[in-house]
Amino acid sequence: MKFSFKFASALAILMLAVPVTALAAPKKITLGFSQIGAESEWRTANSESIKQAAKDAGIDLKFSDAQQKQENQIKAIRGFIAQKVDVIAFSPVVESGWETVLKEAKSAGIPVILSDRAVDVKDDTLWVSFMGSDFVEEGRRAANWLVADLNKKGVKGDVNIVELQGTVGSAPAIDRKKGFEEILKSHPNLKITRSQTGDFTRAKGKEVMEAFLKADKTIKVLYAHNDDMAIGAIQAIEEAGLKPGKDITIISIDAVKGAFEAMMAGKLNVSVECSPLLGPQLMEATKDLVAGKKLPKRIVTKEGVFPAEVAAKEFPNRKY
Ligand code: AHR
Figure 1 (cartoon, rainbow, N blue to C red):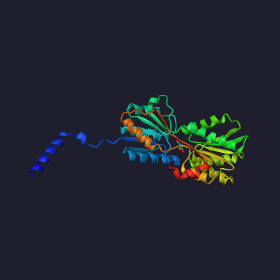
Figure 2: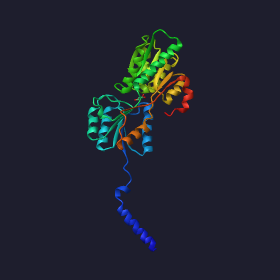
Figure 3: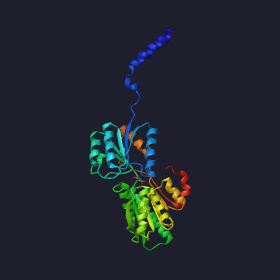
Figure 4: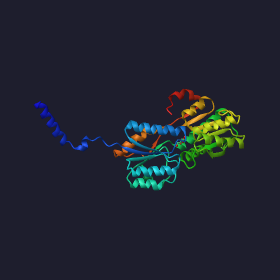
């Protein structure tokens, strides 16, 4: 009894001597993330990757869905500043129009990471790091696949290509067009005869492809800036009585599971990979920033190209 009283007193003295701050749980890191919306299978996988990785890393994630509107993203970023989050990350729906809000974040001392898409601002100190794919390279890969495919088939004459572009003013739409056209310059027989936005959605991809097919009977190739628009276009092609993947060669970007299913059904010829699994990398970068580490200005995602011939073999390995 005597011993336990002494022990309890010693413990009490010891506890008083330890500063309160040392006993409190470490402060959770807060990350404010503004997502574009849920326009595609890719985007859904990207949101899931970010939410899961935040849970795994023990980061308090404030996730906001902008429903594809820049004004909603700006509002969300201002909200994150007011809440004094540790780090802000966002995937910008379009490239331009971010100067003011990024200056506000900088003045508040909150670092900003660009995830998936870039912004077009003069002062690149307004953001600390950009992680995501090289969209220009994806466009080049799509065109290089086409050139190789036509060579294999011995096609030498004119080839009419229609293009379904992503959201107007977005980095992937601008860059995927640029990369594709860069390769086409050395192949004057390959011509983009029609090009219009399908806003990265299945519904719009189908609608625009229907219009292309009504206006033009000479379409040989479809280049879609993402799989969802290609899948929508496949429906339009079938409804027009043509065979997608045979009468019209179809090239798209993302390599989501839906694209693999279309390739295995012989309706899509190739999908260039664009990985949405950016969550773990983003949480790592957030922790590094809070720990005072410097991030590389550009972190490029490693990706491949999946033609229809490898789809069945690769499908079981796909994570999105
Ligand atoms: O920014 C990446 C692009 O956005 C994906 O290719 C597309 O599917 C998405 O909506």
